[in-house]
Each structure stands twice: as C-alpha cells, then as structure tokens.
Image (cartoon, rainbow, N blue to C red):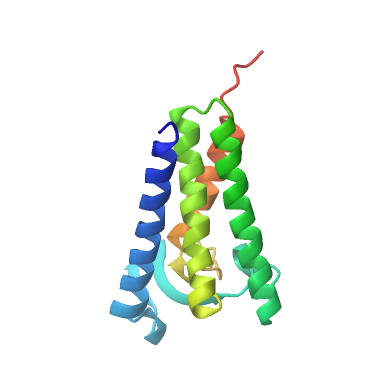
Amino acid sequence: MRNSLLLWVGLAAFLIDQISKYLVVHVLRVAQGDIDVLPPLLVFRYGENRGINFGLFQGDSDAARWVLIGVSVAICLGMLIWLGRSASTKFRQICGGLLIGGALGNVVDRVLYGYVLDFLNMSCCGINNPFVFNLADVFIFAGALGLVLFDGKKPS
C-alpha cells in the first residue's frame, strides 16, 4: 500500500497521545495538583479544553463539541484523500500522519469526555505561560508546519 507510512505514523501519534494522557491524568493524577518536571520549562498542569488551540472558541454546548468533532474528522478525511491522490514523499506522509493521528487523539477525548485533556505547560525566561496543551497538539502543529514549509516542490 502506497500510503502505509502515513497510516503507521498516524497510528503511532494517536497511541502516543492517548497513552500519555492516560498516564499523566489517570495514573499521575495531575488534576490533584501541578507536577514539576523541569520547572519552569516543563510542568504538568491539568486542563480541559472545550475549544480549539489555546482555548479559542470555547463552547460548553454539546453542539459546539460535535461541530469541532465533525470539523476534525473532515480535515482528517481531506488529508487522507489529498495525500492519497498526490505524489506524496515519505516526509509528507510522516507530516500527514502526525496531523491526522493528533487530530484523532483529540477527537477521541471530545467523544469520551466532552473536552480535550491537556497537561503540558511550558514557560521560560520570566514569561509565565498560562496555556496548557497535549502531545496531540504538538503532532498537529508539527505535521501542519511540515506540510506547509516543505511542500515537496523544488524552488524556482
């Protein structure tokens, strides 16, 4: 299968995200208090995100939740179709897999909990970052950035 790398990377990103959330939220019980990992650079801090990145478009309604689920699934299907039809390099398949796996990790959270579980907080250099995120967000960002910056076209 021509896009098997895309599927394997997507599955790996999805599993890494879901396992990390389970371990930090349910085993380490980060909801009971922050966990200093490499303070202040990395702190595990519990968060429930009902919106998109950085809590934008927060919505507590069931309708908002299902709209976000639908948009995420549509983006994943669009990515699968686009990368399946184009002459896709290994790098593009990896980036697409990261994006799809991360997006589906957050979809599962929304279906199970009604929100996305976040637990990573990073601050540095006297700047206190109030936002939390998760590994799915990292995968989505890295995948999208890779697809945009390295589109496979040779510079003219």
